[in-house]
Image (tube, rainbow, N blue to C red):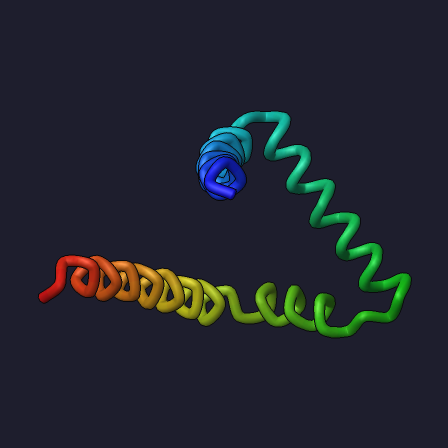
Length: 90
């Protein structure tokens, strides 16, 4: 059981590191663009309006979308800080 737990943790750490690195390469940029194109195609083909509407909304209001993204990042950061303080026992 310990082996699976440790291998799962190690795998997630390595996977995250590789994903961060891969996203910045030319191949990674191409791959993520293709994934976005396929999701757009699937949204149109399957008549999934949520994906299409969200993209249209982001294009129509880029400043608001950026502000929401910044606020989400700030909340994640504050959650990390709070979790770190809870781990300290204070």
